[in-house]
Image (cartoon, rainbow over all chains, first blue to last red; front, side):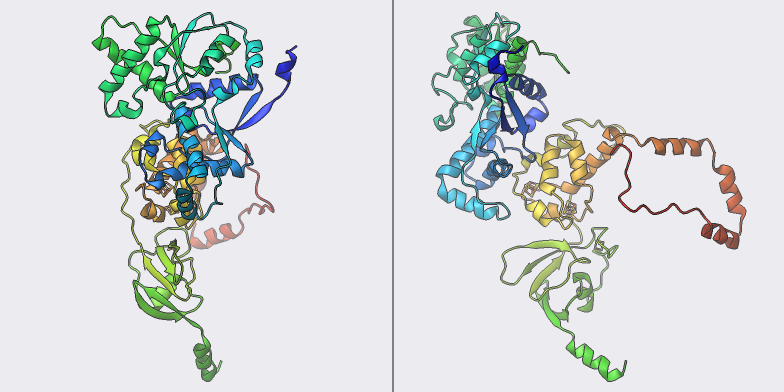
Length: 279
Length: 246
Ligand code: SF4
Ligand code: SF4
Ligand code: FES
């Protein structure tokens, strides 16, 4: 028998996957769908969705790059949802900022609505959320689902996109703690990690690899010095940088020994005992 | 009909004004753009093929007086309207990737690797608005970007490669080439195999029909005609035939 609270409130939420979760970060999507279902949250993938444009699109004032974000929000609304959930930190940031613009920048929205004359005008009414924001609400469900307590030390890495600009932050933007609470709820230990909101270098990995290698070194070393056995993140690009660049770090710093990097949903799957199920 | 009547009828025929590359012509109402251009004295050397909406050779763009919309359509399928400004686009320059379909894999990244510019799509939807086949062009480019070969193949199935989407795209994507690669890969590697077809091909290879064909080759035309008329005809199905695996 499941404890009553698990049988309790079930919710469905509109889900925007983003391109990376369908390609390079399939593990993230698969584990996320599975573990959230176990705590009573079902992801309903939008029938139609478009590449969010990534944060790259936020680096310019050209409104053409904001169309994708708004169009996704229109699709969610059209399919009858008031909230739109997305896992990838980049998609979260881009869509959340698109909605922020829809609510606050009247002039830009007039242009966008006029340009998209085949779509209904968008009013900023779809709330973009990140699944980490549901953790507190589902705290007891999570605790009750744990089959194999983690018994390890984790560094919760937020990066910038879940926290900046502060209007889109999923938590205290200077000192977030949601992921720490998640780790502890599953019997792990969340280490003190001063560089948890330090930027990993993001898409600079394509143009300025050295900078990203250096950042990876600093961030991973900081986690390691504070006793971490692993790092968790919600961003496929942070995951890529922090994981893949460790090989490069080793070439420069021969004494560097590295740490594994996981999506937060992977350690949830581990704790729930469903890690390699159905794959 | 008497001569006089015919003349009168001609006089009654309603004419509309169209502008071909800026020059005004009066052409009879109800003609397609293609016929109207011929009526005006143009002769098609390129830019026309099937004249039936299948080949995609006759791409046309036009604007109507007093409207900001730039429309795109097929000249052989679209009727002229009064005050139409138009031009033909018989060809769209677009590079096609070269590949040997037997040697490449159908994975998440194949399409974006051959056509990296699809990552430049800003979801403006201009391509969809331009498509005379009313395909969801933006959606098939978006599914190509995320490696969804099946969806790209299905959404683009009716593409006639007219090039109008590519001519309008601000991201300079050659949509129809991307879609064609997706359909080839999907057909070759991902679609369930048609077993009955494979069976028949094997029968042909084992020369099961050779004797019959050999006999036919020796007959004269009269005999063939008789055979043709007396052949078994499968009854036409009333409704959509159910395919296996549907
Ligand atoms: S998808 Fe493009 S090339 Fe194909 S029919 Fe539509 S407009 Fe023409
Ligand atoms: S016209 Fe080009 S940029 Fe616009 S939606 Fe279509 S493919 Fe994307
Ligand atoms: S001539 Fe073939 S589609 Fe118009």
